[in-house]
Length: 169
Image (tube, rainbow, N blue to C red; front, side, top):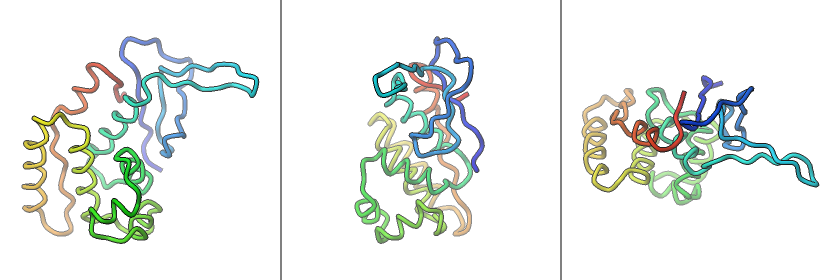
């Protein structure tokens, strides 16, 4: 199991108990605020404020973490990119079954890990920053040894989101 990661909205009051956000497909995401419960005829309904911002913050957390992604993290990023397993497989030059095995944790991610991180960064970064980040990532990938996983460039990407959106605690 991955280490617990907490997110909160700046300037909002904290919940009495953190909310375990399992709908992300990740078992380690907890929300410290921005969650309300509404009564409906069918029972309680959970509403999460700024869901898109939360998913961007989770994606950036995954991209910036130094260790290899887990299968569920890999799936989370693929879904945030709105790609099917077939489409992502084409980008990575593997079959959709290989992508499925990555997501289940049955196959080592290897070079798919930094490549998906790069694709996600291209997807979320402002255009002016994309070229710099991708160049640095490409340089790191080409200079690393085969068994070594390159560290994703540590720009202040998350800080930019934190100023206006969700923050990882």
